[in-house]
Length: 307
Ligand code: CP
Ligand code: NVA
Image (cartoon, rainbow, N blue to C red; front, side):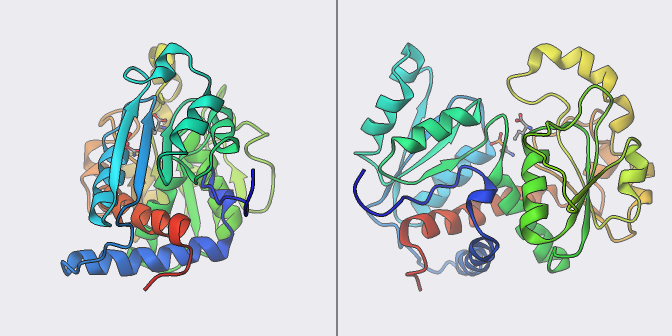
């Protein structure tokens, strides 16, 4: 394909630390302008296509609202209402869609699918969640940490629960941004070594309380991710001891934050009092999806050529 290589955001590690810090700086500015009702439409005439093969509330609303706020427009596709559901090859779909729009966001199952799409796309592709990664959520989460507590470099973060897309993206973030991730998952649900190569940026703990001891941030997510619903009952039993409750929060630093990408299941992975308690910043995380993804779209389409 002619021209310079296209910058995609298929996983957090597609960006350097410098690029992530740039996106955070732009997030701050774009959020500030938005709060002051300042007109900022650098993406006028640009079109984003969003392809959803799994359900979504936050990702859809934040990308759609964000693109309109920046002056562009959005096309929303699902497997059921497009030819994707009738087995048109991803390669053909990518070649067609990317001739018509400027940017594509995809939420799907295997990471390999968005890799294939990106390899045949003329425009940047954003991962809106795969089985392996959820990089847009991590941008918002780390930006939220910075807003509340300053730089995340040198801090310690606990991941309590499933070895899922969020866990693997936190692992990439720890390596890239210089913090330590404590991970605790139940027996039978280990980290996949291909997605979590060993390194000084993370430590595994058999006991979730040990993982939470002294950390600056406690993180969890649903016990059953989208696509694994058949395992729901088995997982509910296996994960019972990996619930984030007040006892676990007490093991963390007194000023530790609690995060969850949402949607949450109160009484399963997190108790009501923690989710609604003073350490919880879950709704800030959700809001920051909007601001962080506006900065991400701006970077992918305009680079650093912005005001
Ligand atoms: N956290 C998140 O991605 O939420 P949705 O599934 O609602 O998009
Ligand atoms: N791990 C969850 C995140 C949902 C936003 C899932 O993949 O279903």
